[in-house]
Image 1 (cartoon, rainbow, N blue to C red):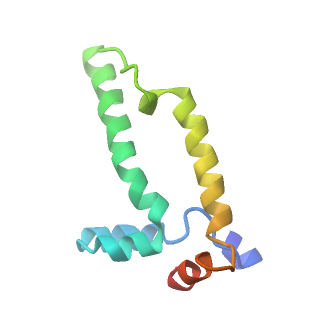
Image 2 (cartoon, rainbow, N blue to C red):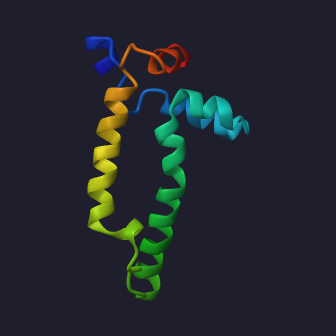
Length: 100
């Protein structure tokens, strides 16, 4: 809806196309559609694995940066930065916008 109303790409724009490309083993094309989404998949798998481990077996959460509130704040900043950078019409982002 953001793209339809403003003409700007949102953070999730291209996510479904990226999933389609990943299911067909085309990583480069998936990264072209939505790089943040593709690069976030390993983090999501990590979080789900340790959350299920904690839920099923009662094993405490790991004390790592990837599972901390600091990483959550860092990731939110990264998402906002991605939102801004993917809509800038200057080089090198203009080239990436033509791909997306």
